[in-house]
Each structure stands twice: as C-alpha cells, then as structure tokens.
Length: 435
Image (cartoon, rainbow, N blue to C red; front, side):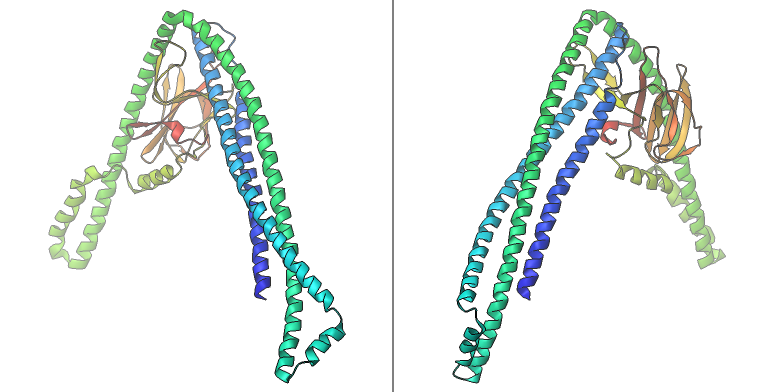
C-alpha cells in the first residue's frame, strides 16, 4: 500500500512540474504579447510631415519613445530566452535522472518476471508451500508467494509510471526548446526593426543639428509656458493642502468634543470644566502632526499599495515622448529638458482618464486649454492639455473614468501632460504606472 502511495505522489509531482513548465512559458508569452501589442499600436502614431523645428522636435521625441519601447521589448525577449534556457538545463538533468531510474526499474522488473516465469505453474507454487517442515514455515511461504506477486505487480506499475515521467519530461523539453527558438527568431526580427528606427532617428537629428538657434528659441518658449502652468498647479495644490489641514483640524476638534462629552458623562458636571480644557487643548496643540484627515489617510494608503500598477492616463495607443526630470536630449548639443511630469502622445480623439479613485479638486484654464487636478488623499494627479472635460470641481471619479478629450494641436500632435504629486513633492509618474 505504501509503495502505491509513493508512486501516486511521484505521478502527481511529475504532472505538477510539467504543468509548471507549460504555465511559465505561457506567462512569459502573455507578457511579451502585451509589449508587442503596445509597440504595434504605438507605430500607428504618425510623425508630422512639417519641417519646422517644433514639428521635428516632436518627431524626434516620438521616434525616440518608440525606440525605447522596442529596446525594452528586445531586452524582455533576451531575459525570457535566458529563463527558458535555465529551464531547459533543469529539464535535461531531470530527464537524465529519470531515464536512469527507468533503466533500473526495468532491470528489477525483468528479474522478477524471469523468476516468476521459472516458477510459473500452480503446481510449483503448491510444491514450494507444502514442502514446508511445519505449519509456521508453510504460512511464511504462502505469505512470501503472495507478497512476491504483489511486488512484481508494483514493479510493473512503477515502470509504467516512470516511463510516463520520462515521456512528459521529454515533451516539456521539446516545448521549451521550441519556445526558445521562436523567441530567438522574434529577437532577430525586432533588432532589424530597431536598426531601421535608429537610422530614421539619425536622419531627424541630422536636420535638427543645423538649427541649434531655432531649437533653443523653441525650447525657451516651451519652458516659459511650462513654468507658468506649473506655478498655477503649485498654487492650486497649496490650496488643497490648506483645505486638508482644515479638515484635519475639524476632525481633531470633533474628536475632542466627543471625548469631552464622554468625560462629562462618566465623571459628572463638576469635573467637566477641567476635562474640557485638557481634552480640547491637546489635539489642537498637535495639529501640525495632521496632514490629512482619516479618510484621506486611508485613500493615500490604498493609492500607495497600487504603485507600479496604476493605469496609463490616456486611452488608445500611446508613446511616452517626454520623461520626468532633467535630461539631455541624445544626439543634440546643449539641449537639456526639465519636465515636472511626463508627456504622453496618443491618437487624435484620445481621452484622459483617472488613474485612481478620487475627487476632482480643480478644473482650470491655461492657454485656451483645460487642466484637471484629482485628489487621492495626500496624492494629486494632474491632467493637462484637454480640449474638453466631462467633470467639474467636486466630482467623484473612479479609476479609468474619462476626464476629458486630449487636445490635438496644429501640428497634429495629441499630447497629454501628466503629473503626480504627494502634497508639494513632485513624483516620477513612470514609477507608478503599469507599462
């Protein structure tokens, strides 16, 4: 019975390992397909046909963003190839071990079959049993004959099970090798596309390098506009922080009042006056420790737990064409950008969408376009360059709710400028979004 249980456990373990290998390959394939889909969609975003500096800078940002996506995809393929190769190495070792075990099982089974063949007749077995010298020996011989038959049957089952293990392992190995071969082909195809994109980028850079003065003038213009927009955002966020402080103060006072009433009920009217003084004063003195009220703290905590998996704030195909922070534009001399958020290029008609549950804290105009601030506890997400909006101040929104349509400019560019703050601290949105 114990042997049968062991065999059953081995069979389950083999099936589990086979399923894990297949599942792992499928998971890697799903991840790659998602990246591949994003790249295919981003390639539908067309470059401007205009040759002015602004349009060409936009084309450079687009092609650079597409190159980054393809490089990321190629790196993912290479990582998956390495992962599958490790799996192949493990499967090969397991297969060798199982084949050795199968050989040993077959040898033992052959020996038992030969023995039974030599003593196959009922008469031989009866002679063996009845030739015993006493009843005890007869009983032991009967038990031996029965157990040896069981042993022979178990050996046959073990050989079958082990053969199935070998077959399954060989199948897993073939699947893994095929997956690796397919990946290597994909990698080569993507590298060829990357070379073509790099060449296209060089051509754009070649044209821009002759227009350094115009580039600096255009960037200075964009910088002044961005500074004014950020000043307005900063002012509105300061107002939100002040509102949060007042909400915290009100909550502290409410709790103090509740505590005072409880103290009066417990200790009587005579001690209520001193209790009120002590109870009310303490929370007010500690108001600086409050940044937001209890509901804001709860929402902030949930928001933080979603770091890295928040949805991209634009619908449809997209490419990140402007990264967060200060960085040098590769290929152009003395061209340095400073971005307080990220710029996401989408298709004409794309909508801005909320990245998380929250409340619209501000809707304001700048340069003829609309901008929306959504508060998520201590965190605030900012959506700029909208031509129309579907929300108003005080609106409650859920994750992925549409806030408005992203503006498409005269150059045909549909770019959402997106920022993320924790109170006054500027955050890198790319670390929080799932891409």
